Image (cartoon, rainbow, N blue to C red; front, side, top):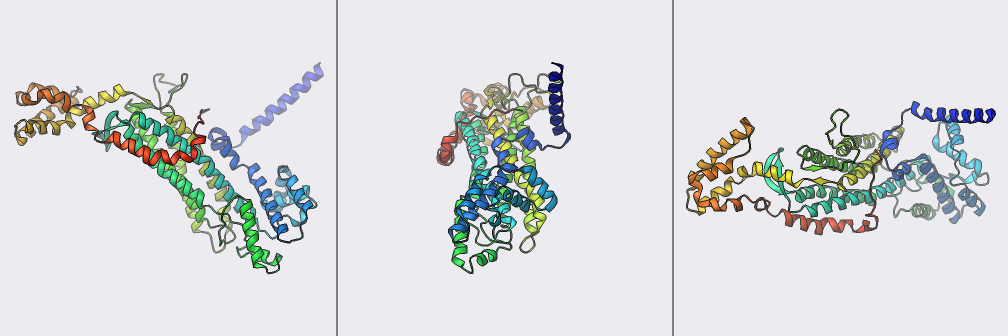
Length: 497
């Protein structure tokens, strides 16, 4: 019994020590704290190196089909070992060889002895490296686009619900003419719709690097096929098709142009700017107590101030969106310093900037979906703010009504100016409520229009065509854009943190 207990304790202690070791080194919060499983997997070593093996299989199959001496047995052997990667062996090989691709060639060859002579035949490292990056970029967009569509859908529903709810507009963050809660949401939606277009365009513009050789000339493959240009072109086409791309870049250096990374990450950085603006607006409105993000039943807003309901989800989006925007400088600088056919100073940078851009975009979209699924509106607070400012905004309408009743425009303007200044002094100097309306009602000069004041001060008369703009915008521009994603709309987001 004691022996069993001692053995169990040893195992438990070893497990604890191994687990504790994870907390002895830096872990990216993008993965350990925030990112979705699908996006984390998309940029994982498992997917990366499995894709390398798929690409070697595609190459072997195409070369065999075009007449090179590759056997069915070799291809089958490669296919049977596509996923059983010995990561420890690969790491050991890389320590010796100082070359990640050759380390994995050797590791693959170790479990495919029959196919070993033809693995990576005619290819350069960028055949697997760059083509895999392009696959990851494409698949990353395919993860992001439905998430963006769901955010747009939730926000469109919100805009529709509050299309005609008057609210104070703000310019310079000073009270301005009224708009509606739904119309303001459409300003957010319009930017997100542009981001949807940009992401879709970047995804659809992606091509495959294909089979191009060491400096992009395809010389090694031309030699393999004894000068047959048609077979080299067909090899490129076949491998591109197997990888799920419609086109390959016709010209490359050793790498595909790093301008491609600029195009992809610029669309994500632009999305980051949009999300930052939306979530900043939500934070400002939360301060006014007009709109709040979802708040869990047992959530704590502040360790010191129990009453607080901080907009932590919107703050998280803003925080991460800044990182997403900042990452844009990496591909711009990398593209600018690629000498001639390529240099290797892109590699370490891209290992960070490409995954982090997609991981960050993934996180902010998931968080924004959660926010937009539970936005809380407080109409009574909004109404109180309108009442506080509307008398000032209605002065022009009061002047027009007095003129129609036979008054002089200049005389009325002076009366309103004096009363407005007096009311403003009460608000600013005494901290009182806006009493302009009471002053107008108490001045005999305005007796001809007193019966019209309720109509003149109806907030709905100040919102113009906001409800009609919401309706037309949603029906003509937003809903049609969501059609391709209808089957993926029902996914809800539950934030673990």
